[in-house]
Length: 318
Ligand code: KG4
Ligand code: ZN
Image (cartoon, rainbow, N blue to C red):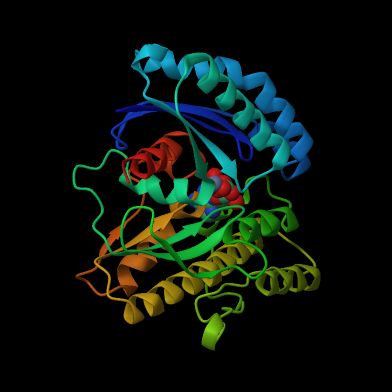
């Protein structure tokens, strides 16, 4: 079964064709990142207008690269929530029109569920249930237990900033570009992670699986205000120390959830799952027999339509 999917929830206009939920025939992504880099963050109105400009060529290219025409497509999927409303509307209107014109079923997909299904793409051995999955992106920070397809049990989420958002805000604070995650993680490789002792916000009791990163961001701000001269080494040390605080918090929460739930595997998903230091720490801290997974390709970590097609396929099958 071939599903055509559209994703426009934030700053990536994407369309994809995926076969049987796992085989990616095309995954076209047009990003408006360069425009948002100028403003240090996504301006919703700008993102929506860029989607309008990009959506038609991206849709055409996705069909072309998959070597398909509309007769080959069994269903159309689209991200409906959560996301920027103006941005989502472009994708939803396009998907609804295509479904109407070509007489295909339309499948609505939640963006976070899409990130989780990115781990099913292009894998020779599919993930095994039950598993824990931590979705860490610019807008979301959610820890879930999955006992089967589309059985999402939320254990915790962020009470304020998502992890990716914290990376982006700290990057802005340090005068670096957007998005902050890849820049900070690169600078961190030249920095000393023990130079500054930033807080590891571990909440307790019923909030033990929730996250809070705004205090950490404020701690970095106070340190930046205190330091007179932000030379390259200071910025590298701040980046490394901040990154260490984020990834240690994420890893320790996952470890705690692992100890309390009997699961076969632990997964990372979303933009921050591309972070190499996070992957390494997780591998070091988890018991050695734990199966740890993240998307097999870098582009499946950040926003893309292939993951939406996969989530739609398994929902349709269910
Ligand atoms: O999943 P995504 O593309 O969009 C949302 O759904 O939000 O995630 C984007 C986020 C940004 O905040 C970006 O800074 C972060 O993912 N990110 C990273 C890395 N690559 C992207 N954060 C840390 N390390 C990275 N290597
Ligand atoms: Zn996302």
